[in-house]
Image (cartoon, rainbow over all chains, first blue to last red; front, top):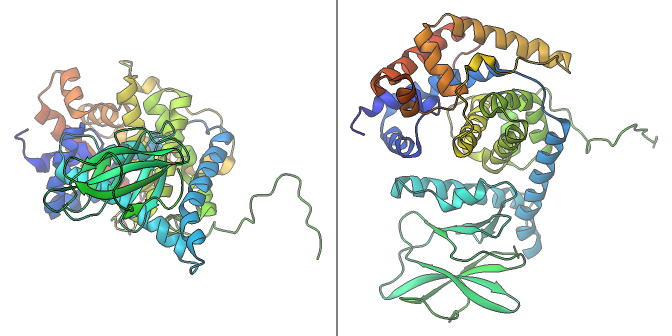
Amino acid sequence: MAADPHSLVAPYALNALDDEECRAFEQHLAVCERCRNELAGLKETASSLAYGAVGPAPPPELRERILTQARSERETVTSLPQRRRQRSWTAPLAAAAAIAASVALGLGVWTATRPGNTNPFTDVVSQAGSRVIPMGDQGALAVARDGEAAIVLRVPRAPSGKTYQAWVIRDNGITSAGLFGGGGDASVVKLSRPVPRGSVIGVTVEKAGGAPQPTQQPFAATGEKT
Amino acid sequence: MTAILTTSPPPVASRDLAHLSDESLLSLVAGSDDQALAELYDRFGRLAYGLALRILRDEALAQDAVQEAFLAAWRSADRFLAERAKASTWILTLVHRRAVDLVRREDRRRGEPLDSAAEPAASETVEDEATLGFERRVVLEALAQLTPEQREALELGYYGGLSQSELSERLGLPLGTIKSRMFAGLSRLRELLVEAGLEGSYP
């Protein structure tokens, strides 16, 4: 795609780019003030086109479905800080913000570093019924209804000869869920096995190549079971 | 204390959020305020559903798109705060994106002319009809003032969910032509909508 990236601002505002073009344009957008200014107006206009499609009202159940799901996600988000210790009333807010930041980070990092690939973290988050659970302050786990899961974690590059290893920890045993190197702004890792309900996901530092079982306490883990 | 009689299950201690701007509502949503989410849905749910239905032509899929978009707003409302956009633009963009993702995945796009899409049914709420009807008229009148080529590019792109490459293939025109029609059409539309008072500067 050798075209002038400025010319993609209108197709982008209309959401008429394919995934690859979209990523390329977003990279351009990050460094082009002119396109950002132009886009702000064109996006508003594009979304006004929605008024041209006004039709019948949605079924009333839809409102309830959305609100029920939103409340259940909020409970997940707030249970961690509340259970650890009663912190100030801002704790749930901070946890929610940390998760949202992790999601944004997962998206941003992937967009910036892996053009042409899909982002496993946002893929999971975008599935209906998926949940996001914080892993301390460093990141979060996203898990879909069917157990498909990915983590985003802000960790420095693993020391030489070492690797990060993710684990699915259950009452009846611990299994490896993938290795990764860390570094950059954050790592987005699709877990290599589905995460059953009631698991804890933890990450340890292990010898390069990984270990059959964790050799240390996880330094990052979901604060509650999935 | 006087007992309060309710005829239907009361909404959880509903506060009056009607006076808040869309943007203020979104910042409450960023703080996990579900009543603010409900209010936001009441303001934009119908518009969102109409848009999703127009793109997807399937009620169940349109509901999925709206649900996913509002939940995405719920999860990431704090990201909005950094955007130079109106809350309505942000939400409608989420809805549009979800619907287009779904239509591309399902490959449900039809070749039929777009203006055959369902006309609005009789409205259930008078208030919605009054406001949405006005805006709908303004947008349709503005669209009618574009050249047929510009209108086609915007309609097939925005309501049809076609990418610029698909459009170029379908119309047998170079990609550059599609891009410039989209740009000229959208820019002209903006002028017309600003003139009509529907759009202005973003906050």
